[in-house]
Length: 284
Length: 156
Image 1 (cartoon, rainbow over the protein chains, first blue to last red):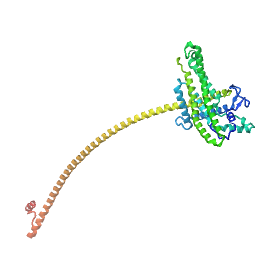
Image 2: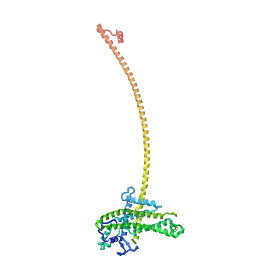
Image 3: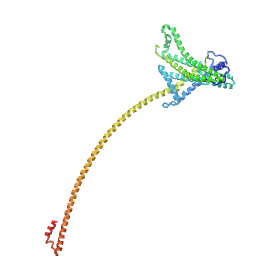
Image 4: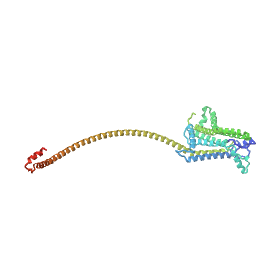
């Protein structure tokens, strides 16, 4: 999120922790959530990602309904540019024709781009509004948490990464057959004499794909978010305001590069991984 | 920084979104783009063909024009020839006609002359008789001097 013009912040640690805590169901206030805990549900992450998904779906429906074959205007032009861009990537990388890969790639690209773009909203804007609404209902505004960037959350990035991982396995089996896929684990990369090593190596190789996908996006977005929060901390006095504005603008401009780049990388690696999974030759 | 039940929700949203975008935007749009590509290619081919045909038509028109010009020139020269022929014919006819008119006129004139002469002759003889009567103071018997009068008249 970009810098905010919040009043002087009395407790920086509390400020940042407040901003990094999710609006959650299934967890007591102040309780630490375990690294994997399926009894907890982050309402804000789901809410914003679903809203953005809805926005994209609405846009897609609106454009798709009024497709004009000869006179592309307005939104259709934008959509055509994105579709052709993604389709070109798919054609360049993916070895065979496939009906799912294109929609998958464009959904990842646009959805991740939209979720990352939430970072450009002022850091305190939505949390402050949420706090205000919360206090209307009698809640302590300091206990109303809201994290507006869904991709600064491991749930979102790993939801995408694990979906891609499932598709990698599916495409491997579809194109190589179950036997071919198991053979790949047994005989690559060192041939049949180092079978145990092969299994470990290939397993690591395969598992590294979703892990790197999920962690890369999460890391980039989380770091960007954290830096915006640190810049927002500069609002401790009026004299630091120019520095806050300069740094905030600078980081926002740089972040404008990072946001689409991360969306693009996620899409591109998805196509590459699924392309590798659908290569049918025995010696790769 | 943890993985929670949200993950499941996100996966469901993601799957629905992919399915929705596929049906609503991706496939219809690719079809439109493909159709457009085909139509543009067709259009360009048609334009190329049209240009070629236009070239042919222009050449054809030029040939026709040249032919027509030659024909027109021929017609004009024929017409000129014919015109001069007509003029000649007319001239000849006129000359002929003029000759005929002249001959007829001459004949008329001769006839008039001889008629006048005849009249004159008769009147001369009467005049001579009248003159002689004045001179001689007595009547002359015309019959008796007919011979002499005729001779006189013939001399006029």
